[in-house]
Length: 116
Image (cartoon, rainbow, N blue to C red):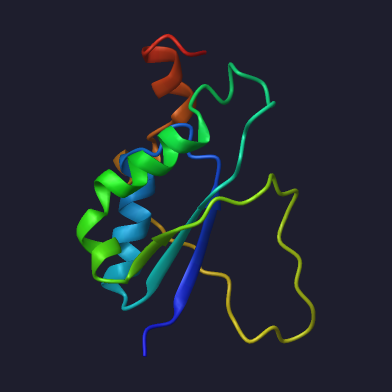
């Protein structure tokens, strides 16, 4: 049975680096729940994409995986952090990517298209 990994973020926009994280997790045998935080009412320069636009970005990149049931998308309210108690039964997973992929910046993308 595949276990699910939760992947929350603003995803402003959902870019190649985010996709690489998800594909890495899928390659490790996990299913991935991508959780875009709702950004309505937040600073527009930092969050130019509407919630439905970001969900569509994810759905476009992972249509097959969503249909196969190994990727799901669920928007969440803005979060301050992730809390857990003693021995929660899961682990924190840090996905390391190559330097080129890790250098991808949502801020730079927004600047390049005139949203920041």
